[in-house]
Length: 190
Image 1: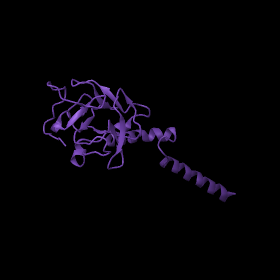
Image 2: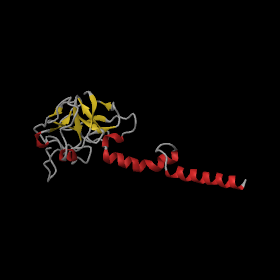
Image 3: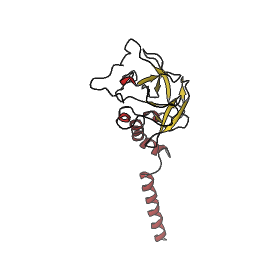
Image 4: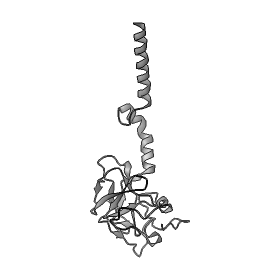
């Protein structure tokens, strides 16, 4: 009897220890609240568009002095690279370009949108993620945009453009948009 009780208590202690160390995030309310902040921080730094709550729009629209533009769920502007080939299924922005112009990624095969009328799709990235496309063109963030009102990438190198809700490139107007001049020390066309 003592041997069975000792074995049972040992198994119980082991089960409690393993429960505290592992499990999948969201499996219980204790596990979920303990892992959510670090998981959210990782998701937002590696894939800004994919940290959107389930059911929320990953792309939406916002006003700018250039006109209505598409922004990600975090409010940051998204851009089209004119060197990409429509419906090619791949991005022409690689290497240093991809560092300065990170892909807008998703975990959904059908990203939710609000106010965007262009055709939404996805293409695979080199690192196995899914990059969002509008009208067959991959979309990107600009590394110098820090705030939701920033449009520093507009017109950079003559190959980067903000995206209209219909999926077309927004062309720079004769007046400079708020926050659209390139920050000093950068001329990252591609």
